[in-house]
Image 1 (cartoon, rainbow, N blue to C red):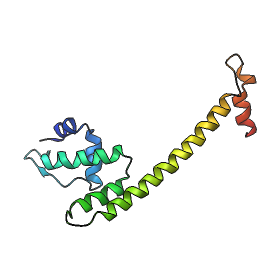
Image 2: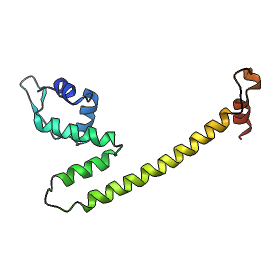
Image 3: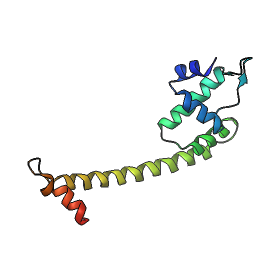
Image 4: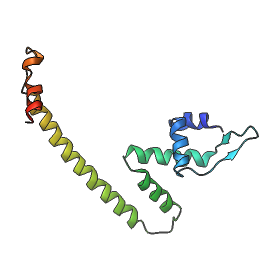
Length: 131
């Protein structure tokens, strides 16, 4: 199948597919006589795996590691578990940072009412004074 059909079947854009190929996350493909890339079911499976991993906000290097580990089905999965624990910690840190950001934005929003002019905008004044 050609790249357009692969994109439709997986819900990935053609640009994303080409990017994953460039990053060596997708295996090389055969070429048609017209020099079109040809994909098969293994590409659908791998691209679906990559898409799920990206949905979990895993980095390309983490996905690359998981793909390498997947090629060794008899190996222990402690490395996979360690990677997930590290990722969970990163997500928890980001959640705390976003909660702090949310509190700061709400505090800033309380400095201004809708009836003010920009000249007297409490938000702009707070940002200008560095508060």
